[in-house]
Amino acid sequence: MRRMLFVAVLAVIMPGLAWASPGGQGAAGTLAWTPAAAPVAAPAAAADDGASAVSGGFSLFHYYGSSRAGFYGAFAQRVTTGDHAVSIVGDVSLHFPGITVSTFLGGAQVAIYRTDQLRLSGRALAGFTNWDGSNNFAMQFTGVVELPVKKLSGMSIELEGGVVTDKESKISAGLVIQAGVLKRFGGR
Image 1 (cartoon, rainbow, N blue to C red):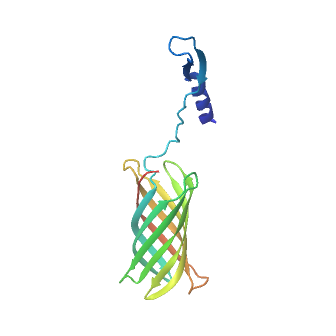
Image 2: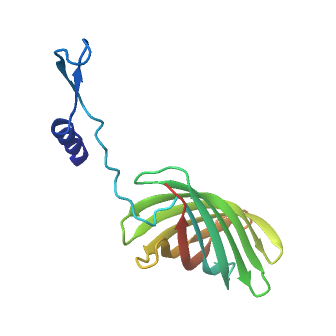
């Protein structure tokens, strides 16, 4: 509503006036009103709202009755904009001892809620997990909490938690908890 009011006020207050003078210079002209192109203010976006993001940090993977700690890395590329922007995501994690658990997943992330202090989104990923040498199809559903760090432009603390299941375990699910740092970059 404010944007429409702003455009209407600009169109009335700052019109471009053109004198049409068909007879050439010095002839009596007619006044023709031509509205000037009103600048449309873009919605204010946070300086750290880049189209791409990379993140990495610590990961805890609990599956088949045991837990493994390790590291994760993820890349996200936004493909739509708006309140509920969609990104494609790739996520890789390695868990120790001896890299006995690794996951290679890809899928989508949908923004649910976004302010300057907090961002919430959900991820649905599919791929495979390797548990002690056994490769299995896996799906991971997680919630992501992003806490932007104001003093470091484009940087956020990322917390992620959710469930993982694979073809072999059918109905049992594992738990994944990840915490790390996220960096946004690129244009809109």
